Length: 479
Image 1 (tube, one colour):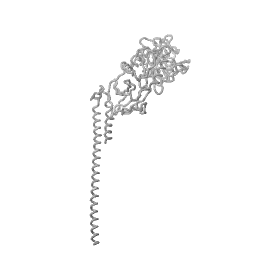
Image 2: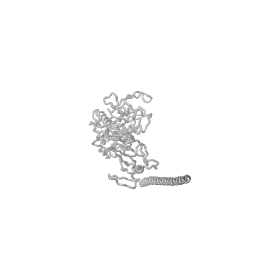
Image 3: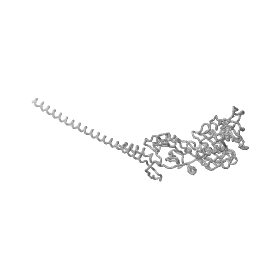
Image 4: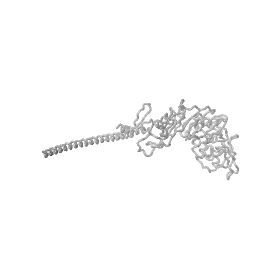
């Protein structure tokens, strides 16, 4: 009986729990980015190394969680890391075999001392060869040629660059050219550069070309000479003192006004990192990047939200919830991906808290925090079929608010609540009916046993009477 009561209560609680999560609006504005940074725990968070760069950021790519930052929203000149946006728009708007013809303006407007590969007016390259020239030796005239090819003019392409930046939601970025040569109103920030590189490395063609250390464009029908190209990124050159085997690709930049700038994509131990350093002196952009990558890989680990294997403390990362996030239907909403969290190696999985958030665009996400700092998020998408019992719904779909003890607003969908109560009543009724049936059966069985006992008694008495009569008859015959 006690076991059945527990089962009924557990079933009702399983249905009711998803309805009681707090729902809050969430949008990553600049102020909220700064707030997230301020929430990095002072205790339990690994101590970061000192760096020379004026601003920097390290982000775990799959979760988008900031592991380290230094003035990451501060406006600074990007120098040739501008070419990341040029490469992104090129890959999004062209095919590799298209032919780029270089105008006089593209070739001669870069000024003396700017990096180039010696393209002359009227010469042609394929888009693929142009991207090699753009990314490997950081050729400025190639950036201009691609801009004219895609935008009709450099000015037209710059408009596309700024429109793309706005579409991405970049917070402090404005372009005035396609190559990064210094202009006063041409700026970005470390956080925005991380976002741009993140978009780039999602394209396999970018990673393929940007990870090349040396390339020779051979003479062909378009160009009657060879053009050798060597990378400016010493992190991927095996014979360099700054070589880092975890680094896959990236982009360097330098002007006198910008200092040394470096955006880097690395992968190690199944954890992908993007590191941006800006405003370094000498070759400290390589030194700082290696320090920050070593810091991140030594002090943090990546955990999948759905994994059930034991962690350091022997607990599952989702041991405290009945929901396992691995594209498991959650009713009206479903996890879009498996989702991951980033934790310091000294932290345990059971320290993680979670809550639902409604984003400004109406999307729903589950947010995971460690000591108040966001360490993972997972987006939920609306299902076409909404017949499941376990449903997250948007805040405006709720009509019955209940205030929680923590001051947050907890809300319940009345239809879902009615379904829960009806289901609970049905289960309770089934249990009561089952108990009555057992009692009735027990009573019936007792009656049968009693009747059987009475029959045995009556039968025994009859036998005794027969034996007595038989004995009396025998005695009479003997006399």
